[in-house]
View 1: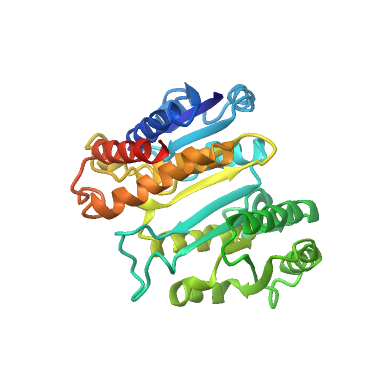
View 2: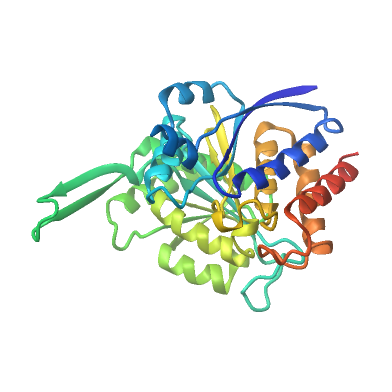
Length: 356
């Protein structure tokens, strides 16, 4: 039996509700999958910040390094100014734990509506690999003459060859592992960003010969936004920098049916990784049991895959697809035809059936 220590951060708003359903599914597949999970809960989020002024203390960072993975619900509180929790918890964790990959699967589940005309699950099934610790989010820059009519703000994009190479390597390996079209598309802006994007392109070209079975492709970021909408079937794995990845993954979430089904992983392949639903804390729905937990369950499925529990991960993914196709009227909050807990019950039931 494989045992895993998991740190759980339920977070704010509806985060605890959707995390509970993910934990339900993990516990359901644990026995049949030969797995054992031990959970340690952390009260990081808006309420703790309002009580103590703390976001993510150094002592908690030290503890998080000892876990196999982190399972996050949502961060965001209506009584805390935007940016405080996001930077203090999410970005701080990514940088402190060197979670240099943000992985966002873009999968259209059967039965889920996409805003794209004449596109189905066979057309929308790709992954975006986003560099997660450099670029414009590295925090380099500052103000000159702050608060005056002559104010100047400078924000610098930091791109290192080491950071680019390790992101590209992850993307090439993922392309090979997915074993679909085996096509890796670099997204940048080489015609304008002639320093940062040039580094990405040269590193990409230099690494490609190590993966002769992978077809390489390049697209400008603005063209990628068009093609995500017009021809999503063109993509298998996309790799890009921090800012462009942040933008195009939200577009990806929309074409896969919305934030209610979008999950992501902040990954350190050599350390501890963190998995989360993308949709946010949705405070207006707190306690109503109406929010869609599929994204949180999909995040748990990604965690299983990263931990090496392939059999359990495959069962959970199949169970998500079956639930979406057969049991839910909509992916929207309050329109699912089931409560949050009932959706979790369905996925757990199907996952156990499929893992045996």
